[in-house]
Image (cartoon, rainbow, N blue to C red; front, side, top):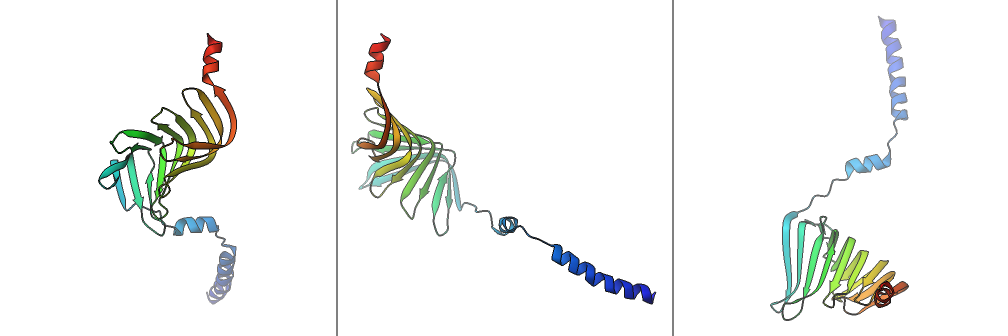
Amino acid sequence: INKIFIHISKVIPIILIGILCSCENNMDEVNALTNKVKEPIRRGKNVELIYSENANVKVKVNAPLLEEYAGEDNYTEMTKGIEVNFFDSLKNVTTTLTSNYAIHRASKNIMEAKNDVVVTNEKGDKLNTEHLIWFQDSAKIFTNEFVKITTKDEIIMGEGLESNEKFTKYKILKIKGTINLKDEEVQKQ
């Protein structure tokens, strides 16, 4: 029995050393386990937010789901889409923005709209893009993505856009093509 015990006591340290040396950790897996899933501090369904200046409604935001997150960079996420209405001094809607996703970064006062972004102004001009950034402090909207603007007379396509938030004064950064709708109507007749 003593010989078996001595033999086992010599083998166990060798096995333990082999096990310890053969352990390998994938750092991505370790980080995934140690990072906590970020949970919202507030969640609301069918939310309506109203922004006003001097008791005049300027902007109304509707979102089916709104989740607010705290941390170094506070943000609010609207993962099920958003509708934003801009108002004039007479409380008439001048511009509408919709998208399938939006995020508001409170510390930077920026809202980003993504996935099927559509902006329509009071003249009926319509902007389609996949990503749009609204700089609330300067009341500007911007994108580097593909844009398509449809007016009564033409369709303009390009890359990148700068505009005021009401989408009444805009500039396409790189125009790729223009289709004159009046010419198209004449040709169809």
